[in-house]
Length: 235
Image (tube, rainbow, N blue to C red; front, side):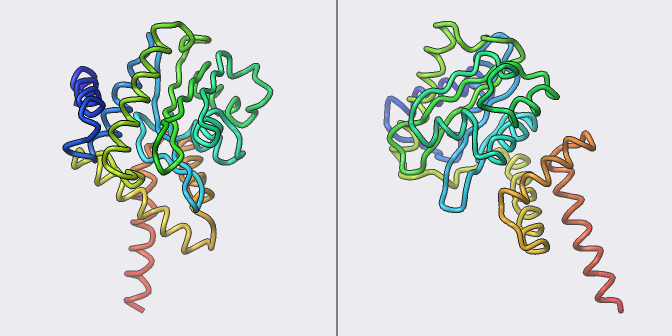
């Protein structure tokens, strides 16, 4: 789904207050969001559930890393927008004293500004997050207007189909990658008796340190467990 198709899908969803294929909604939102500003580099969606924060859709691994930094510190524009239902603008991440963890990760990724929009009227607290490589890139009226429209379209689609907190990206390969990431997280939780957030953070850190994708980290975790099981079974 390209950017034009994503916007068409989202606007139709808003007009009808429903989504013909609910699983496509988050994919459309992050596709459109990632191209919203001249220097946009990533887009993601944050949700707050009973067991903590999650990112059900993202445009790149950079978005995952930026979200994870905020989940780790329990502080950041994506967390605050979802929790409080208000817009959070960070025109210059590096000089914002509120978000130290985010600033560290953003500096490594050359991400200089962010904007998080609440998605109103849905059962699960949700925010749409935009990240840019240029300071104040997300602050002009055109970008803000488009971001607000994008959040409203997402709201209409989600509320029209109940709580879509479990929606995933629909492309078969993307769905398979997500399933493997979730499987790897479950393995780490079981092995280390830890929380989902810490398991997710562990994978994100490994992805960053080794310069590999989250899917590759997940494949490594799953393969290691399988190898260990095969070895134990042969003894």
